[in-house]
Image 1 (cartoon, protein in one colour):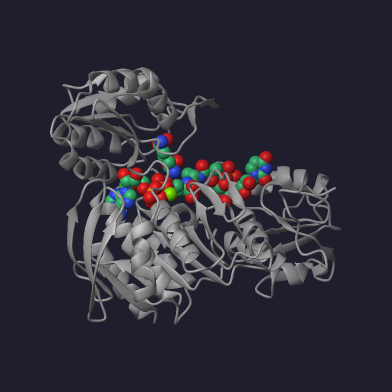
Image 2 (spheres, helix red, strand yellow):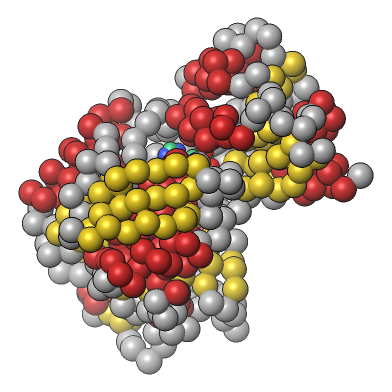
Length: 495
Ligand SMILES: CC(=O)N[C@H]1[C@@H](OP(=O)(O)OP(=O)(O)OC[C@H]2O[C@@H](n3ccc(=O)[nH]c3=O)[C@H](O)[C@@H]2O)O[C@H](CO)[C@@H](O)[C@@H]1O[C@H](C)C(=O)N[C@@H](C)C(=O)N[C@H](CCC(=O)O)C(=O)O
Ligand SMILES: Nc1ncnc2c1ncn2[C@@H]1O[C@H](COP(=O)(O)OP(=O)(O)OP(=O)(O)O)[C@@H](O)[C@H]1O
Ligand SMILES: N[C@H](CCC[C@H](N)C(=O)O)C(=O)O
Ligand SMILES: [Mg+2]
């Protein structure tokens, strides 16, 4: 019986091996006419009739698992390398130039339905926020809308948690097919640099792409910042087709570069920001737990109140508005809807107050994001700005001292704690942060650290709990222990 949360490919169609893998492949060692069901990239998930794509990965060579996939019922193997000698001659073996791209395109053929309007957003920070805002704006315009990314899938019928920002291509295309089947017409998804680099989004029929910003992240994966930017550029160079849209925050050097690349590829570019010709930000001012924006679009001025804290949320909200405009809505219809945007879980989310001190949870887990979150909250701290944060294990180690220095410069009280230590020694991660913020308190236990921050807060102070945002677990070793910054803070505030 098929698994209800794992809808299978369109059963009414019969796919042949050639129909699934496509024309751009070498079938010399295969029978292209055999009937197949779905592509598989993980042998452990292979089932009868599947075609196993052996990908060479960061930890293993998928070919080492081909025998396992065949044992579970796979009927053919697709790979870049030459047919291995051990393979039973009766098994179809297809060679392709790029196996990651091939599996994504095969997934698009196996799961052919997609929401009519799909936009993808990339950038170091802001993707989850833009995706959530675009979903809310489209919903406000009357479209059945969804978002897909770090928070999982959020759709009219509910939320489904997902573990990656951009899922693997088979999971992604399966989800698109299911969303279209549920009647979702508009979808905004997050394009991570890993996802773009690994061709996870190939085969997605995009109407528009968006870019927020670029700052240091993932240098454990990308060899240089240029390589990192180049991975993001694939969205505008290879994935959004000519004539599609590009909503670009242009107020940085990287932003203008993206706008240029998009224009060179004949996309309709909507430049957004102070320097934006599409949506020009004329002024921005904090106003209570919100902000007042004055923008100009095609000569018309709009003044609106965004009910969100932080200059960066103005950027994300306007980029989301840009996507709505590039996919058919007028500025007049979209911009007023910004006044109704709801906070995104764990993105400068006010979770409560203690004696007039506000307590915020934010997902800042990279240097630039931490700086922005602290800058955003500084105006609300007539007293002290208190920050609690750590850094994840098994991730870019270079960001630890940078984040320590940012906290030292921008907060009044710094408590260094554990984030997700994963396989690393937590004390060693804390030491790397503490090296650049010697005056900080060190409290490894995250709940205790949050408790200490809240205990010391008085009227006028602001507490920022940074790094884990919406996360509901803490990864220690290979175990995920239940943990939510929000729940811990709320429980302490209710005491
Ligand atoms: C480093 C990285 O990005 N790895 C991704 C990559 O895996 P890989 O191909 O390198 O995997 P591998 O372990 O070397 O194995 C090679 C092949 O053997 C297969 N295999 C392996 C074992 C087995 O028993 N049978 C089997 O068939 C694997 O499925 C794989 O195809 O391709 C896989 C399929 O798409 C991803 O699931 C996997 O994400 C891992 C789990 C991961 O943790 N990725 C993170 C770093 C990530 O992608 N993060 C981004 C960015 C988030 C952000 O913006 O902050 C995200 O989009 O979430
Ligand atoms: N436009 C922006 N400019 C700078 N910092 C931002 C911006 N948007 C969000 N941030 C910071 O980055 C954090 C994460 O925001 P968000 O989840 O929207 O980004 P993301 O790109 O999806 O991140 P991730 O790759 O970690 O999923 C926020 O909590 C905030 O601290
Ligand atoms: N998608 C990011 C999330 C990091 C969140 C932070 N809490 C950490 O564990 O470093 C990653 O996996 O690198
Ligand atoms: Mg995200």
